[in-house]
Length: 507
Image (cartoon, rainbow, N blue to C red; front, side, top):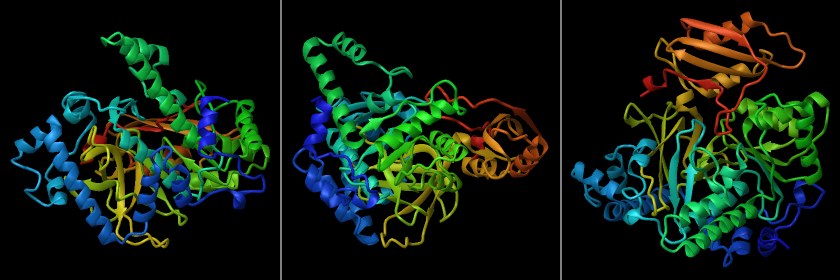
């Protein structure tokens, strides 16, 4: 038995019954806490999430206030970057209520992190014992190094189970399959934009240390721990599409369908573009494929796209939200309308023009993680835009409700000053224009190149396509339409269907 198989056995992972969703084992997060408690030290976090999910809004905000106060005090005392930030503004922990003090600090950006990494932005200027080093390149290939404490790693694992339980009642014993854009980066992080292998990392670390054998053993232990954590969540990781871009050959798409039919997973997570193409293949070939729950990940999924995927797979599709730097912190419930924020672990702000956005107003998503003291993310500007909602959810939870409308760098600001989100353009493209895929590139402000891939057997009406996009963009100065065979992924493995030259105009 392999190490990973042994790890699965220790937490009781088993295949779900073949009769369908109703027989999926252990669907409650409370059961997960019992199964995981005392083995991976995430049981306490699972129990905490269960309890916090039931709290009133007032109690959740009071909980945030206490944890934020501790975080700000610890960051001031132990992290040089934050100490200097406080001192420059004449602030100290305790001089104001924590939430008010938080609003006095500027947002943390990726450039701030890389300019101060590692010694000025890590706790005590160094990595803590058992911490994990992640290197995320995101959708736009902007590298960000992240150190996650051991407690933070356990909390992230518990939050994965929380998302799976909230979004589809997926239990710890249910079979899960993922289709990420880059499997190696998901497991190990990246080095200079490319995955670093185990031997490469051992050589790099051992060559910089006076105790090479001990350093090599620590690298092996870290990789093993990461693999075991991953195996506790996903039973199988399928390969990405590869260099052919969005238009994969029908035979290759059929291989994904064959695996899903053979393995009969309860939950599938995957890049939205992958799920969309597999769903189209299922429809074109008239096949019947049933996956009870699907979570798009690694890219924006619009309401229209989620409905299309749901109908194709006979599935319930739930949006989740997070980042490599912070982990996952929001998920839809069964109402599948808004994203619920885990308020005991994160504070999410929506900011427009430097002020808190109004309910429903588009703004920058800024997040504070309350649990990773090894490298605090305080008011981190994710590079996404979204909205928050003041109403309540029909599920009865009183947690904060948000939505993500796409990447900032994929947002177009029209000549009239109106922001057009990636979400709006995706829904437009996949409405009734006959497009398989597209890519809109703003070369200069108001000047666009639109590459369009036709659905098989469809003759594109380029005039209609140009008219629809021109209307959406408030009549740009130039919009040229070009037929294309496929849309290629970025170096990160993810797709950018909109590239903006005007996003900096959105304050």
